[in-house]
Length: 472
Ligand SMILES: OC[C@@H]1[C@@H](O)[C@H](O)[C@@H](O)c2[nH]c(CCc3ccccc3)c[n+]21
Image (tube, protein in one colour):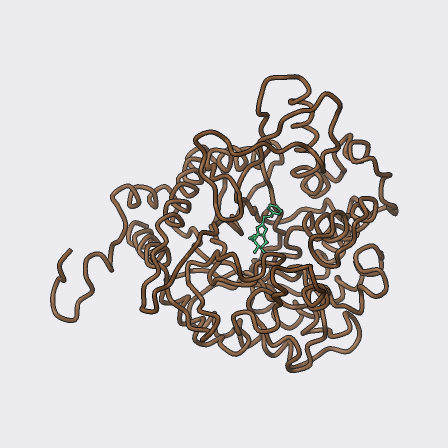
């Protein structure tokens, strides 16, 4: 469309959104938080700077064969040296909140003991800069970068690590509890436990199902031990939660064995962590289905773990369609079918299925009684290409977010207490075992120059957030 006048933005720049998008944002209440999410190891770089200690991901990504083409988080998006410009970018996008994680090894290089002042100072400056720009910090305390020294004495399979985490949470909330009102203890303990200790595709790369359940229990215990310590240091209006990943499971046919395998997979993928958090107990049949023995627990553990949280962070991207075998498949080896006729997939091979997102939100509200939910991660990787100027066309990411927000809007209309949405991710970044080969950002990163280029989805998101502000 033509320019609207000299020096003015074009209509398209102001409103690259549709009439349907305008109706979409009206479904979300006034005060609904719109954000983007990142994580320390995926964006910071500077892994040896200012006293940061090594993490299990430093060691794992440097181990040949573990990460795509040997990529590491050594530089990542160099965010450690680019905080002011990246916050200007968040402001430009109109974010009302920003979810990021604190690297435990920056604060406590040995995981416990001596505090690295430069590490805490970095996060204090980051928080103050966000607040100065009117952006609410959502701080994740643990997004997988465990201090290597704790791994050397068992990592999450060692119960002491849970106590070390509570001490770390105490230190951070003592310093930032007066300014940060939204805290997430753990990001996706399922991934830390199962991908790290069960199948070993993530750090520390251990393949031992029994260890995965012991680690899972200590991660939950870490959350439970940290809660009261954090509450003592933060303001009464502040809120604490954790982010869990969910992949809704669907039966591919009506056979009994398919229904059985689908239910067992749901136990393993979706109920393992939310059940102790919401109901103070592990889901019935979980350990038997995985052929593991219950992890060692002490009296009081499940009460600590099941203590009330102020919100649940929901990370969802896709669903799994399951086909049953004649004998029960162990749920970590259940048969996932694909491609589903007529379905669309992202670069991760994840089916785009907003309906399952809607059903997940309803389930978390009705079955687990969550009184407040934030979508702390949702987004998509597509083959984004940049032609060297200021433009990156990513129509499929816009469509993905539109469809998932539509599903979220329906959940809000159905009474789900959804308080905010963080798209994954603000920036293209280090995508764990996939390295830099997968781009999730609404902002493109040219890793040769570290230049940031707002993608079409970023311009669209900005217009959507602006329309929501106008409509509220
Ligand atoms: O893969 C995209 C993002 C990661 O970059 C985040 O660090 C992490 O929190 C995160 N979790 C998920 C979903 C969890 C999942 C694990 C395994 C298989 C499918 C989904 C997707 N993501």
